[in-house]
Image 1: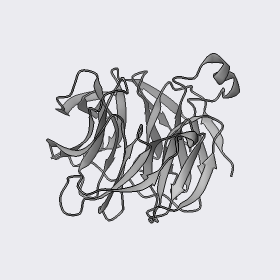
Image 2: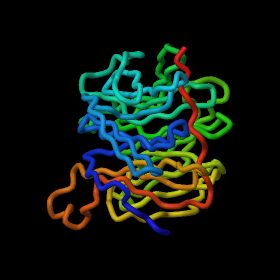
Image 3: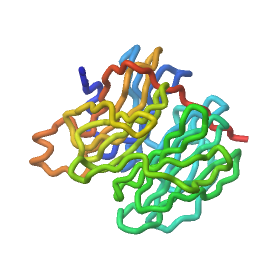
Length: 286
């Protein structure tokens, strides 16, 4: 499979890739540099927006703009700048948001984590038309989430625990009676961001695992895509047919000798997939 680095920008902590079908562009963030990036495959244009703080995810809003999760605040981003605050979460001072996803009802599910990566202070939160509540999933580093196309299955990652959980959220927006969907041996890396394709297969980025994995709905590992960098944070699907996978990566924590072996660490990568991704839902703001 042809894996290509399409933007060797050297992100410190590239995360949260989003294909925005409205503009035909791939958006993602660099959490540690306070930046939002935009890549247009058709024109080749690449833009960077300085937003400050710790932008952790960017997702489409139903007013044509975006919701940006930044540190412990949800912000509205119009594609050029932050315009207003949408909500905030009272968390320990060393916590921040991490990854997020939107369900078919327009609810924004987002995780929090201990920025020092030691305390069990992370959890999953839900933004529902302006109201925010804690859904569960307590752990040190939350990742994902990803949600099946019918809105039933919720995939939640406990990164340090090496676990990918699945919950049935068809009844209410709370994480109850979950089951372990996949367990990652530390020798293969740590589970990072997850996403769903149109066959409801789960794609998982591996931190220090040099790869992305695809799992069938029954938890069977069916595909591994190797990348030339260690820290693969998440995969999103884009292009007109949603058959191009875009993978964000990170160079944080890699020493000088390590960077000599993986000079493209922190770059944005792409590779073709046979099964298209699922379109992103928009956050309902009100």
